[in-house]
Image 1 (cartoon, rainbow, N blue to C red):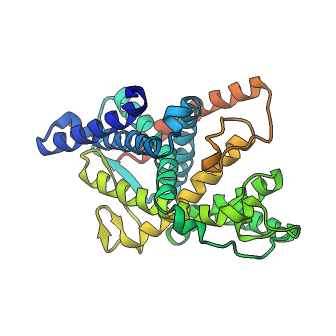
Image 2 (cartoon, rainbow, N blue to C red):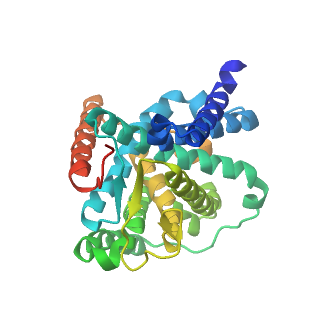
Amino acid sequence: MLKRILPLIIGLVLILVAEIGQMVNSLFIREWFYTIVWWGYILSVDGIIYLVRKNSLIINRPRSFLLMLPWSITIWLVFELYNIRLQNWAYANVTPVLIERWLGYALSFATVLPAIFETVTLLEIIFRQWLERIPPLKFTISPKAWRVIFWGGIILLIIPLLLPQYLFPLVWVSFILILEPLIHRQGGSASLTALSVPKGGISLIARGNLRKVIILFAAGLACGILWEFWNWQARTRWIYTIPYFNFGKIFEMPILGYLGFLPFAWECYIMYQFVVLNGYSRPLGEETGINLIKLSPPRKYVIISYIFLIVFMLSMFALMDMVTVRSVLP
């Protein structure tokens, strides 16, 4: 029994240690506050989910959880790569010790996908009865419309690089429009399919995914508020340099920026689902919707993909040090 509630206990202890460390002005805790408190949150929520469902990601599928972490880092680093051009945020008060700094990047970015997916599951438990009353929107997305969505996503991915001061928000929806058609073509649980009904009748996918979109938006906003709140408390933090919208700040984030967290959760969900569908990571479980593998690539391709992830991570950490880091601790 203790083994089953251990994540909840450890998570609550981590959050408590982080907050007490802040109050007593511990330099170590303040420097690592964000990372500690987010891992505490993830473990706590997973523990709560297990107590309710007797089934959770970390306790029941630890290998799936661990394999998700390098992809969490990589997916966030895709947005960091765009930020090299967009210059929407920068990091302040990072440690001057390279190994510690890069470890901090990895441990912090590894929390992105688990935070969103655990929050999605928690909100589905809390609002289950309300979600069950949401009907699907009944219209069909034609093959031609899917192609328009895909190429529209490609355009939205490119043009912020050309006009970053004006079009930077488009990055936060572009990957949805690119990957939804690809997942739909592979037969996966594309969220946009939730807004359509096949001619043969309403499938379980179509019946459920509209709810998934709504709960992803809610989870994105919930995580966004926590991201900004805990970043505001931390000594090592990010700061925003957003053109035109840099007003009405709540913590560090301008108020309009919170809208970006809604599609961001959807993007993370669909990006990781694409990875799993193509056989480069393990399914997370039926309740998450990320539970299908359509392709089984040769083992050597999977190994090469993880080598590429490592090279990409290290390259991006070095690039962030040169471009995105604004200041280091004395």
